[in-house]
Length: 310
Image (cartoon, rainbow, N blue to C red; front, side, top):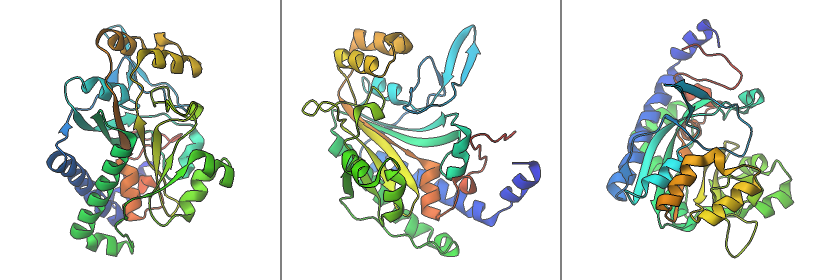
């Protein structure tokens, strides 16, 4: 994006209105978790010795400080688990850096710098945090429809409050029916958000908990927006037993050394059972506004493969 294109972007009436919805969405999400569910907001982590390995290729982003190498946060998954030693219910508005492959620029969903609301609860099950996420989405959309209906009308956006419970489809069912591109096809068909559950073990990171009763299947989930807007959220139950963590790291072709501080913490203090999820804020605003591209609702949009100097 050159400076003239960015100038047009900044002066766009659509962007100005979308940023109002962005601001309101953050407030409503925070209010719901703090006032309605007794969650504590914690500060985000920007740099760390370890971060989410992710299950898809991204370019490593590191900085050197005082002779030590830090990674820029891809997600706060490890920090959320550790924070549960102090608090039972937590969330953070977490800035994430994910240097995605250049071809993802055209998806309309990907930024290399974005924010997600990261939520985690001690001793929770997958079903409990799915219920929480549904209530969070329903509450936030309801409040936006109350406060910002004039903005949505100006976008000609026909948005309705989703109904509980959201539909569920297993990874195996989706793959068998639609093939590898099942998420896109399902999203385009859907009229309301839905859950993709029971994802195969090699399709996710080592920290998502394997179902003790169904080897090879994870106790995790993705929330998918309808109308072709794609993935909204990812989450699930977490591995907390050290022996299982070692096994899962090995299965992914990784080594404990890659996650040394996290492993040392788990050895010394243990990890607690938990479940949680993250919801991308820019993607949520894109869906609410009915925008074609996530860049259209982002003040400083950094897309994969595109230089953005500000």
